[in-house]
Length: 210
Image 1 (tube, rainbow, N blue to C red):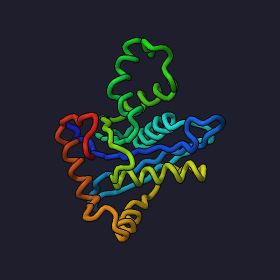
Image 2: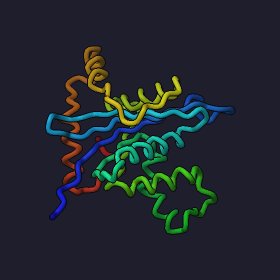
Image 3: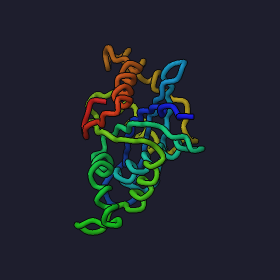
Image 4: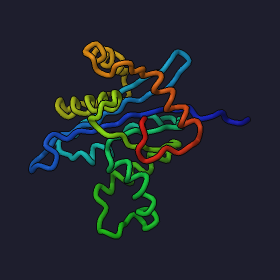
């Protein structure tokens, strides 16, 4: 019996580190908005996590790993697109990882920073048919802005969600549109447009409007 096509998910990721790069322990957070179309409409879930002492780069990796692993529980495999404003994460997966692995997890310029997280991310990516693309942060992309809010809240309150939880994105978007932001933006139509591109099998470029 032939298996049907994999369900498609679109994930918007962001990360935060309060005081990134400054001396001392800098608290951080990561946020993810997960979207999947069901028979009843587009279903959305949130994920957020925190760390008491971290960096932006570590939180970008941690957020991606946690999302991939949660979505892959019980062997569930998805065709997914991860959209992030972290060049470190997106370039790492698209450009650096293949070379590191070919050289047995080494690189020409010295030790690989955050090696344990990169190893975990590589294993987590194998759970799905996944690709990543980059979106410019703080540039008016509603779903990126929402993921950023999740990440900042997690960093500030030092809170982690109990897995994937019901999303507040719809209410968040409605409130901001009432205030004049994102005029005419249709979140479901935007999801469908991106999902159609993923379903087509055409690899997305490093940076695309998603």
